[in-house]
Amino acid sequence: MSFVERHGLLSSERREQEQHLLELVKASGVRWLRLVLVDQHGLPRCKTLHASQLPGVLANGMRMVNTLLLKDTACKTAWPVFSAGAGMNDARFEGAGDLVLVPDPSSFKHLPWQPDTGWLLCKAYLADGSLCPFDTREILRGQLKRLEQRGWRYMTGLEVEFHVFRLLDAKLTPEDIAWPAPAPEVAHLEAGYQMLSEQRADIVEQTLKPLCDALLQMGLPLTSVEAELGPSQCELVFNAQQGMDSADAMILLRTAAKQMMRRAGLHATFMCKPILPEMMASGWHLHQSLADDQGRNLFMPGPEGAHDLGSIRSPAHGVLSPLGGCFLAGLLHHTPACAALATPTINGYQRYSRAAALAPNNVVWGIDNRGALLRVIGGPDDRASRIENRIGEPAANPYLYLASQIAAGLDGIDQGLPLPPANRDPYAVGSETEGSSAAPVVPLPKSLGESLAALEQSEMLRSAFGDQVIDWFVRIKRHELSRYDGTAAWEQQEYFGHY
Image (cartoon, rainbow, N blue to C red; front, side, top):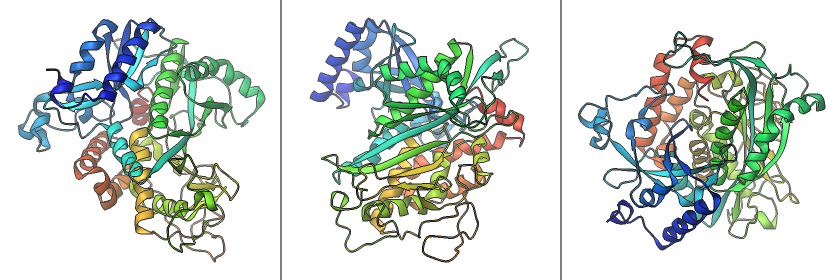
């Protein structure tokens, strides 16, 4: 009996998906398949399988060492796994044993830049057939199921900034090699500081059009390519997608960008703020709303977005429905704890250090205000009414980022959390709010350590994800912090090539 049969994983729906996948692989001419597990840092780990072996792997999975889910950003293991209970009181992780990766047949993509190769996301099980608690894609799936139980769908759209440089020196001589690997030396594509300039756009588009074509071939809903403010900085914008799709798209975007740029003699990085002169930090703006099973936007004020929340009339009235206002209040209330999942690197907190830089530094919301942490766009006739969270860095694990947003928003709904008035001066302490006198505001966490402390103390996220997941993530990130020497050179070596 196969692994999937023995552990009750082979449904009739999966049988149909497997058969369709086998036919698709055969028709596409794919000879090799990358079986991908997205780790805690949002980075793909893979084994490459010959296509002839796919039927066996669909039945029995592919083995991969479980310590991959116990490592910090330098691939250094954060637990004494060769001790009893693996240092976490869980014998299943002792001895650097195996995970069993079972492919998700519905996730198949044919990689345009590697025409004989396909790509499959996998679900991680432990050897005893139990679901691995640290599979971040499944953590998001758990939060999506909470919405589905209420008849709601999670809709998200991505705006992702990143940098592309000319690669001068990959630092691959024996004298260069270190652990972590040295940061490559680069030069700029263009000088920057002319946001949305057509001249700069022409330079950027020459570089990015093959990438954009590849993303579209893989079915990602790319809408625009933009030259951002900083040198060698660009942005890609995607239409809204449902459920897991935006998170999967983020993984594919980063994979395609890094691999295709490297083949062209370039270096793409999703590190928030590369440690080079005059760099601008990159953000990941997450647009989000809820829809019902008919596809109607539940955040739109008016009859279509109506939902039974009693007589609630929030300060967001006119731009969001009462349901949307409560979701917004949850995001606002739980921002300090969620920050560690949206901005999980030491480097990412540099983005909050400058006022009036189109990045947030206070926990406030505003109506169509790009200085606010939570920018609300909407109205009675706007079927795209939504909340844009501007906290994220492009290196974030998308599954944990989105899962935290759902959990926070649902808590705002279930607890009826109060929403303060919209803020009109988001960079000021004690700033002016709509319809009221000046009121103090809470600043965003100043460091990864500060946000981890808030995450560790969050009863809401512990209830949503489980104590084991929160303790696991906090330990990994504190292991990373324990190696930090406080220098810019450390950040560049740790993140610039890795992300």
